[in-house]
Image 1 (cartoon, rainbow, N blue to C red):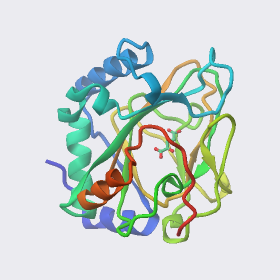
Image 2 (image 1 turned 45 degrees about the horizontal axis):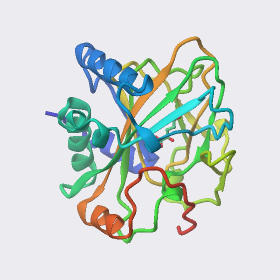
Image 3 (image 1 turned 45 degrees about the vertical axis):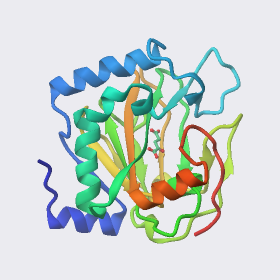
Length: 245
Ligand SMILES: O=C(O)CCC(=O)C(=O)O
């Protein structure tokens, strides 16, 4: 069972992010590495749910592979520790009505050096009356500055949604942000960093010879998920910009 100290809860409320170490055991990480590679090698077909977040138009070199809803494509994932434990985390931090909205895989291929631009996740989402949301970014490989670990601007979740623009060919959304204002979060495999919907974040490109694989789960209140679905939003890949604060 997961427990989160009051001090950590306060940190999450104030800074908008929080590191949780050793969410997965070394044995569990091996399972995720195997399944992850099956997605990357197309042994598990992700069809239209796979795209290049870098917006690169040259299809032969996928720089940042993003695969949406892996738990829908390979349902056994939903009952495994990463999903089960991050659901517990979401409920401990934001309430018992939190449920899985969507999950995704984001891999930075070796020597591709494509940063994920500064953005707030809420810019991707429709405006919802209940804004509670948490994303859990789980390192499947060691995440370092050089291979593209996450950076967060502490306290940025307390402000408005900044103006965002789309990059490249249907690539990621981007807003202003700077490493000088950010906290750099390097992680061991199996550790996790969680953030709120408006927390400003980014990652550098991968300049190393190894992959940088991350599994991300996202939670929000059940009633808000039902509202999203009633409006046709299921996070399978459409990139629209939300300008509401
Ligand atoms: O993995 C990355 O580089 C970006 C991840 C991200 O933006 C997110 O999980 O919201």
